[in-house]
Image (cartoon, rainbow, N blue to C red; front, side, top):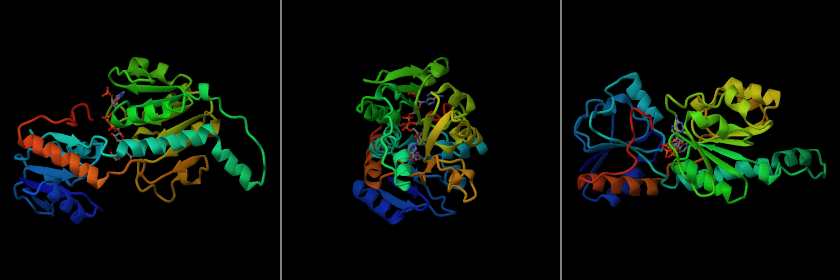
Length: 313
Ligand code: NAP
Ligand code: GLV
């Protein structure tokens, strides 16, 4: 079994070492420009077009992340980039779900318990108890009820606030009030106090965090975007903060990453910025999952996590 690896900025030697340990019979190599030698599998994150185009003998392409928007954008820009017949398989959880739950829960509780405001009071040396946000009306709406969204929603529900979930197809998840499809979108948004975005970035979901969406939320709502920057209409967020429709936002992802130094978000104290770190790809867990799926494919079995290219996730 021949495996091609490409992940910019990663410790390639460590990844190749772990793959060799998981699949001792495999031949592994890091892809270099000009390498057109045959391979059975490609393991990639944001690969260049020339790595994959024309590799019609690949058995599968493994994407070292949950989101496949970047690799599908290559195919969209230059159809034929992704070899025909090789399924594109994304990571499923591999330790990202607990990381997402930690990140989002932290942000939601920070808003619910008004820690930002206490920080301001502390800077003014003021001892003052603020009225708490009532838990019963501090409704959290999670966009996307997939591997990550469902886990995050259940982690939040454990704190006792009402939690809603939104997906494309109908889902039943213990403790979560679920909504599905465009027809139920407004009902999902109605009165939500914290909107968490965990949708994949597809042609259907781009720009979903916009003025219209914000206008349906409770006055003074909070936004947490941990999915993709392309979901957010940035000027609409600044306007919603200026009008008071939104009280604050926590953003982990941006249209341009790294966020440029002159971007207005850096100047807005109500926006909390993190550098796309809410759920990192963990090497050990990812190698284990990918290696197990490769072995299953070699045995002729079907595996989960195969991307529907038309749907975009
Ligand atoms: P997933 O399992 O594929 O779940 C996607 C969810 O979104 C599903 O519930 C799906 O509905 C729903 N959905 C898709 N299109 C929709 C539409 N048009 N309308 C309504 N719902 C729609 O994905 P995941 O593993 O949870 O990951 C979600 C995203 O998180 C990734 O795509 C990635 O962009 C982002 N992410 C970010 C980080 C980070 O560090 N910031 C890390 C990992 C992932 P169905 O249930 O009906 O299919
Ligand atoms: C990270 O953003 C991922 O999609 O895994």
